[in-house]
Length: 219
Image 1 (cartoon, one colour):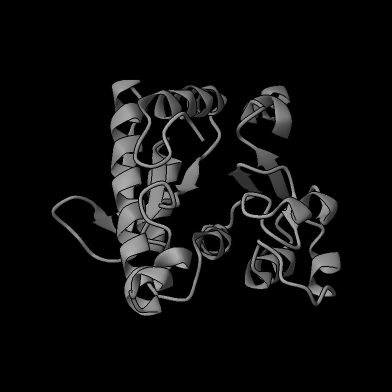
Image 2 (cartoon, rainbow, N blue to C red; image 1 turned 60 degrees about the vertical axis):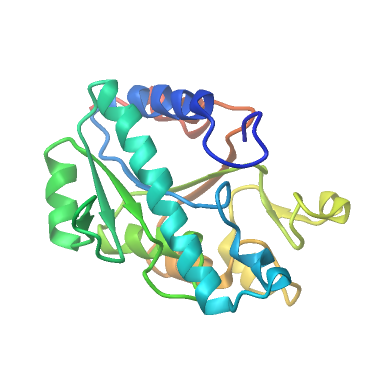
């Protein structure tokens, strides 16, 4: 998303900040799991001679860079924010501790969770499903560049345009499919087993509050 092919686009950060600010005003507890594909994409690292484990570790570090940038923008907008990382780096962020994350949320702070699960071979989507289950979230919102779950990645092949399975991540249907899909089955299993309502939206064309119905929420 944004005009840059890679790196951090300040206009995108400002867009996210305004979206999060609208939700935060509704007194919704917000935990954000960030990716790092704009800085380093592990799936293409093999072409550069980098091993999968190393590439995944590099990708997790990239998510921390994004998390710190987003935290800075949010705090400049007077939104109290904490960054927690699955890989310890205490000089720049707190380590991820479930009870501490929940306490931050209860105090009205936005919690940005970075470094994925802290383990290679697991995507940040998997981390999001896992963290949502751990903090007992009421819903999981996956905001990405595409508007649903595809058998192939819409960003890398035009064939994916005909492969839409379902817009709202109908988990049971996905699990029965044998073809590769861009959202790992681990995530779907986690959120369906926990009865977490998943919402899949495109951040390139919608406003999160409006699309998810949060703007109709009354506390």
